[in-house]
Amino acid sequence: MLFALVLALLYVADATHQSYTLASNKTAMREHVKQIHVDRLMRLSKKRAVAEAEAEDTMVKIQEAKRLANKMMGSDAEPDDDGLWQTDIILNKEQAEAKIRQFSGKGKRDTKFFELITSSRWPQPVKWLANGFTSSDVALIQKALSKMSAQVPCWTFQQVSSVSSADNFIMYQKDSEGCGGASPVGMQKGGNTITMDISGCSADNANLIVTHETLHSLGFEHEQCRHDRDKWVQINFGNMKSTDQHNFVIDDDTDTSYGVPFNYKSIMMYGPTTLSSNGKQTIQPLVNPTVNGPLMGNNPIMQDTDILLAKKAYCWNPNPIIPVSQYIFGDMCAAIGGTTCATNVGGMTEPAACPSGMKETIPSTMGCAMCSLNFGTQACEGGSEVANAYASYVKGAGYSCSGGARKPFVFKYRKCVATSPDTCLDGDSKCGDDAVAGLCTSAAVKTRCPKSCGTCGKS
Image 1 (spheres, one colour):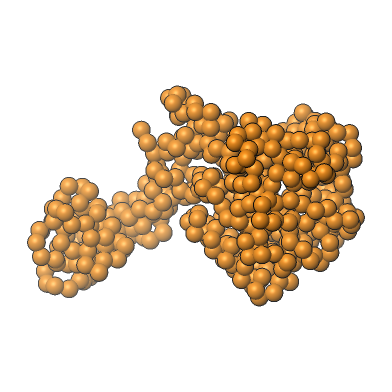
Image 2 (cartoon, helix red, strand yellow):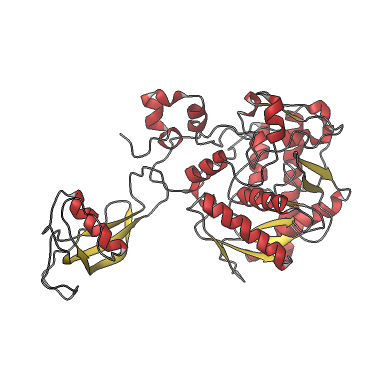
C-alpha cells in the first residue's frame, strides 16, 4: 500500500459521493503492491529472493481470486492485474487463498469473526508512524486517529518514531499525487502498511481516507459487500466495465455484523456511482433511494453503526460478566484514630486472590483514605480511585462505618484486570444475521449470541 507513483485506483470524494478514477499504469501499481509484500516479508527475516518469490505468488493468487469473483458476478472478463482487492484492499497470501477457496467452494473459508481469529485483533495501543508526509499531512492523520479513539474509547493510537520487526504497527506511507489510499485487512505479521496520499484532499476527504483505510487495517470490510447487502442495495452491473464486477462480490458469510444493521451512511460504504462506466448508478439504494443515495460515500467520520460494530469487535461489553478492572479489599471497616492517614498499620486482613478470568496488576498493598462511610456517602475526601472504590465496596456490602465526621480508614487491597477483552462471546458468525433479523427474542438465540443480541452480562 504505498509510495510515490500513480495509484491504479485513486480515491476521490466530492460533495455528493465517493467515486474512483482508474489510473492508466496498472503495471506500476502491481509492482508497488508487490514491493509492499516484499518489505513486510523481509521484516519477518526472510531473505530478499524468498520474499520476492512469495510476494509474486501472492500477487498471482490475488489475481486468481479476482478472476473467480468476476465469474461469480457473471463476467468472464479478465480483471485488471493491479494487486488490489475491491479497489483499496491489499490481501496477504493466506487471505487470497481463502478467497479462492470461498469462490471455488473448496476447503476452509475466510473469516473476520474475531472469536475465531483473535490474532487479527490489535492489542492496544496501536503503534503508528508516518513516512514521506508533510507536517501538515501528519497533523491530519493525528486528527483523524484522535477522532476515532474519541468515538471508540478502547482504541488508543500511539505515534512512534521507529519500530522493530517484532512490533505490530501501522505505517502510513506517502503515495502518489492525488487523493486516495489502500490498506491490508486485519493485523498483519510484519506490520501494516497503509499507502495513501492526502495532500490533494480537502480536510474532510483526508479524514475520510485516513479513517476508512485505518478501519480496514483494524479488520473492517466494505459496507456494500456485506452478505446481507442485497436487501438494501441493487448492484447495476450493466453500468460498469465487465472487468470490474469482481469488486462487488459479497463477503463470505463467515464474517459477522455482530447484529449491527446495514447503514447507507457508513464510512465503509461506497458512493452510488463507484466504478461507473457511463455516469449512472452502480450501487442503487432499495430503501428510500432519493434520500439514501446522496448519503452513500459522503461521510468523513465513523457513523453510529460503525462505532457500535467497533465497540462490539474490540471493546468491553456494556454489561461485562467480568469487569474491566476490579479492586479486591481485605477489612471493611478499619478506622484508625487521628485526622491523618497512615499506612503502617499492622494486622490487616489480606485481600482475596483475583477471580477467575482476571490477573493481578497491583499486588496486595496497604491503602488509607479520609472517608465518612455512612449511608449515602460513597466517596472519600480528595479520594483516589482506590479510595473511592473502597468506599463503594463498603457501601455495596451494606455496611455503615462510623457515621458522621470523616476519619482515616486503612485497608489492604490488590487490583485485578480481565485477561481478555471478550468477556462475552457469540457462539458463531451467524449470530449477527440472526440479531439483524430480529431473532433475539428467542431464548436459544440470546443464549448462543449474547454479543450480537446485546445481552452480555444480563440474566
